[in-house]
Image (cartoon, rainbow, N blue to C red):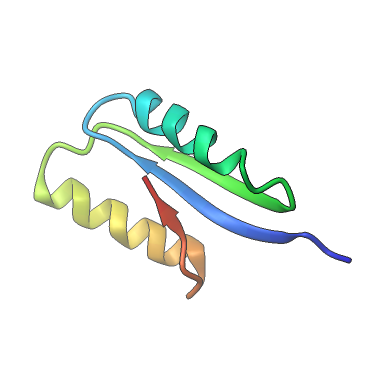
Length: 68
């Protein structure tokens, strides 16, 4: 059986380390799912947020990603 793959994004106004640590702690509960993870740090302006959202939507190819 092929493992399910889920996209995960850690978005932060700083380095995204805290968001990543929190997310990894939660994701550890789901051992049967493979996660494709990406950090998007230093989101400071609405324009940065729009660019991050556009990137997430494009990379997720219509799937529903998890965003921390």
